[in-house]
Image (cartoon, rainbow, N blue to C red; front, side):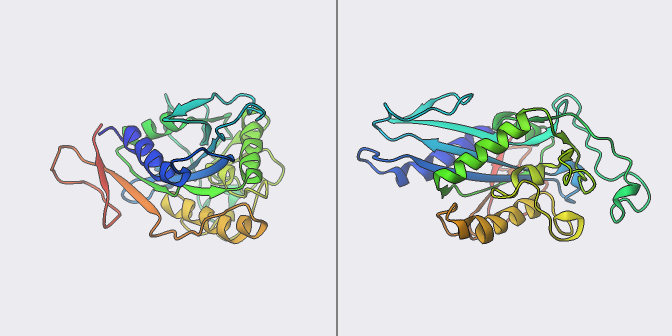
Length: 266
């Protein structure tokens, strides 16, 4: 099955039982973190992103819709959803990411010659297409339930990115503090902080792709949950679903970083 269809079906299958069969008396909120990477986990072929969902209560006459988010329906439930997937604006037509360019640029950010690019927040469908075009492995965690305050922080982050004041740079060490440019990792990290730091490169060694989103999840569990935003326990290994490219049905899989994975074909 197409990868996007598999992912959407799995999200529905995991959230629907949690909503129950009776009337939904209160709103529910969920996050679904994602990542993709290639065989060698090259930073220029890796990405971290997250989807956020708001499910309306059945009696939603007095519930205020989120401006700019379309209302959709699945079975008897109406919901809003958006994705934070921060990339260069022209990445769909020019998917060549500059991460480190220059001698010693991984250790010394001033040596990095990669340009700052205008950024754009991509939809889930667009982001999955990018991973499929590159035949990457894709990971999905959750869905995890969050409080309304967590959803509101996600909306605030989306509006910040969509506002056009912040640009994109994969190596954002010299730019995120002054809110000039940030990476995909820092665009989705820190629900309760705008630009968190920590570890080598501001994230940790090799903190991109699956490792990057795992780091974000650990941050959510250790920081956001302490403020009551994250309602579910997190197991970064057991909660992960992996999807891998297969050139033919029942054929060999060129790259599979997991013990168990679902196959997709272009």
